[in-house]
Length: 396
Ligand code: PMP
Image 1: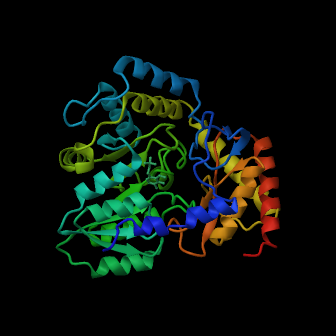
Image 2 (image 1 turned 45 degrees about the horizontal axis):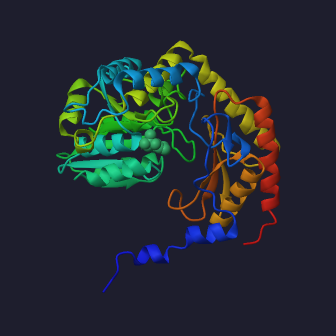
């Protein structure tokens, strides 16, 4: 008889890394998420979070979460659909829709759930989803949850997308789904070309702007604002776990589409609503972004400073214009060893290994915050350069 747990007993990747002393996951923080954190008794420079605007420790955001908890309690104990809608949810939805220049918006409890809920509601049996191969895992899973046909195109390859669109039957509903800013590489999606192709082939466009919101465009409205395409993007999805310093997600679109999602999305209807504390924190963070758009420029200045500093050390860095700077380490072992070495020297970075990347394309993902200081960046540059230099002689 086959034991369903056989794969668990045979799984030894984590065990080997623990034995080798380079297991990089589940380090414990004993402080707020910020540019400097406390982890396992050490002070660390954090360049592995998505706290792009530095708002996770902002007094107004914390205060808003505390006050909301005192007023509404800890959980809503039910779906938005039934007993779980707070006026606070509606306030955040209204302000987000207005900020994103969309007719309506609704919020989910996580970004991951948003993609599951939006895609599975909008794409049905008679539809085709065109999805970039480097899209986030939650998009992959959302497409699998829908009953639509899924066609993956090569990453940001517009000829491939055009060819695939041209072969699709006219009588099928079509949607192109792409990350606005790709989470691992920091690449920006080619939205002008995507929008043009969508028009040509009668497709809709959905952008996952988890890493674009608060980051792209002069006022942080996202990748659509960066390209001046807010009207042309049919569905904008995003999360509160990055620039908005909280947890949750949203969909912004025309009101009929949002209304349809509210009444047809199973992950939305059959799951409890986002708690008041998370909602209030995201709302407070959004208001700070509106009031202090200069945080967006500060973030880009820090990322540019870091890119230049790493380049000056002879590291090959991609010329992206986002606060995600990947450093290629290629193999899994080199990546884990490098991350561990940086951890020991007080710099927290994220290892990105399969299945998050293809085999042989492993990388260290570094990401920056508007409130990082030049002094912190200088330390990080020195340490990264030294660790990567050591890696040159590393034998696997
Ligand atoms: N989309 C993208 C592009 C992401 O990077 C992430 C999370 N890293 C998500 C969706 C899911 O968001 P959350 O973590 O807020 O659930």
